[in-house]
Length: 346
Image 1 (cartoon, rainbow, N blue to C red):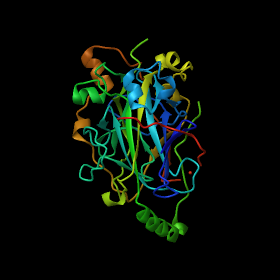
Image 2: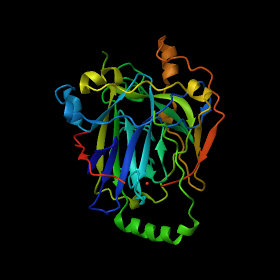
Image 3: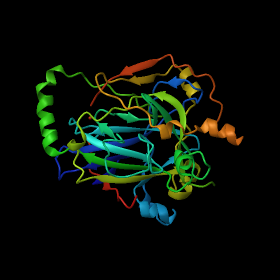
C-alpha cells in the first residue's frame, strides 16, 4: 500500500516483511546551467507539496482522475530531484527495493518505453539503499541531465522528443521489495559486519493560465552515479508491487486547482553560489555504475530546444562556479500513519 505522509510517498509491503517500507520525496532545487560543464549535486530546498488528485476531482481533467495518485506544483523551467529511503525517513531499517522511474512513460534510466516489469538485461531500475537520489535522466556513465519541468505540448519534454506525442507527462513510479528470505540473509550478513560500518551522512535539505500539465525535459549536465543492482534480478519479489502516478501541475495553476498558494520560486544557481552555500558530491566505492542510455543521450536539452525554436524560455544563468563542495557517502532513517494513495491506472 502507499500512503501520503508529510509530503512523502510511503510504500509498505507488510505481506512480505514488517521492515519492507520505503519513502520517496520530491525535492525543490536549483536549476543548474546548461553550458556544457558537469556540475556537482545542487542542494534540496525543501519538499514539494503533494496532494491527492482525487481531492480535486471536480477541478482536474478526467485523465488525471483515472490515473489517481498525487500531484505537485512546478514552475516552467523549475528543476527537481527525487530522494529515496528504504525503511522511511526516520527508520533504522534499510530494506532493499528495486524501483522503476519514468517521465511521461519514458524510463529515466534506459530511455525505453514504460513497462512495469523489471528487466535485468536492460538494467532499467534503481536499487535502494544504494541509490539515495535521482536528479535526472541517465545520459552517460556517471552523468545525468537534470529534471526540468516544461509545459506538456510545448515539444520540450523527453517524452515528446522520443515518442512525438505529449500524451502522459508527469512521473510514473513502481516499487518492488526484496524477497523476504534474501532480506533476512542480508540482515544476518549486515549484523556480522556492523562493527566495520561507516556512520551516516546526508545531502543537505535547506528548508526554504496556462496548460496545467507539465512534463520533464532535460536540463544541464550533472555528475551523478547510477548504481547497478548488486543483488541480481531474482532478489526482487515481483509478485507484489505498488505504483503511483505523480502529476506535475503548472505552479501558476496550482491555486486555481487546490485553493493553495504555490511555493515561491527557488533562487538561481548563481545567487546560491555567490552566497557561499554548499553543493554536494556523492560517491560509493566498490559499487558498479551504469552507463547512459543512447535514447536519452540523443535528447536535446531545454536550452538546445529553445535555441532551435528561437524561443526564450530560460532566465539567464549568470556565473556559476561552485567552490564549496561537500563530499558525501552512503548513509541511513519513522513514519506515521497516513492516508492511502489510490493507485489508479498508469
